Image (tube, rainbow, N blue to C red; front, side, top):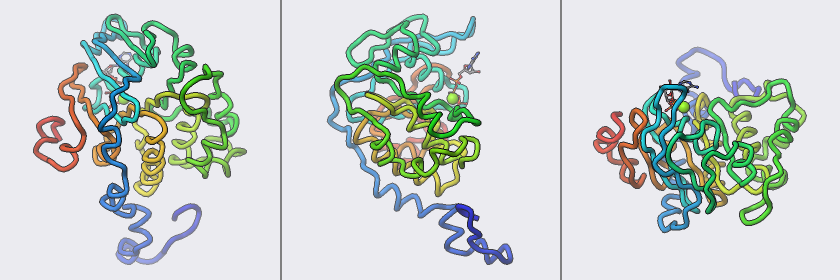
Length: 281
Ligand SMILES: Nc1ncnc2c1ncn2[C@@H]1O[C@H](COP(=O)(O)OP(=O)(O)OP(=O)(O)O)[C@@H](O)[C@H]1O
Ligand SMILES: [Mg+2]
């Protein structure tokens, strides 16, 4: 089934070979998709928008991040990669003020925001799409979006109003009155991104936006992000390397809470040996 319609029925063999089924499950082919992506848009980006400088972060007594530094510049998509438990989500949470670092600095849009509350940091224009999406399941899409609609500081950056958000995620408009729990995984992800975008957003932090999505839905989210990148710099954590490397200009790799590699994304797209060296995959 796809979007509520039976695509094909019959013996397993016939179903598996059916072109429509292949499209739903496998997508149109990643090569086709990636060929359409804008690569290296941020190649000449120089203006820093988010700078994490030498942070150490703890959960109680557990020392999770060790001297982590990274930078996101205007015009860039930067990927933060690493194995499960490496500290990727913790890095995003530190930047967002959810788990403040014990040492080091967070600079955002020219200010030192170290130790500021998540609400303050959000108001300054940092949008966060958490791992697992975290929508309120029994509230409608419209209500979920309204809850995310902070009064952000006016000023530079693009103002994201509802109409503009619908341009990127047209499906959301049709689902405004539906409870979030009744949406498909892909639709929920789009709502989570839309929620993070409201107001004057200067950067978007995303934690595993493709997690749990079927390939065809991943494609749709991928294409939305590939358009969004022209509007807002993105720091993205993602395990699906092909997808994330197709989007990213640069990558940082975390290994047990330390940055173990930093560099351009392009060589990692094609050089499998380099991928193995840098990412153990
Ligand atoms: N709230 C918490 N309290 C204590 N330890 C935590 C907490 N959250 C994460 N950790 C620990 O911190 C380390 C880094 O976790 P983090 O969630 O940042 O990893 P990650 O790279 O995002 O992993 P994944 O790819 O599985 O999402 C792990 O060892 C994890 O067990
Ligand atoms: Mg994580």
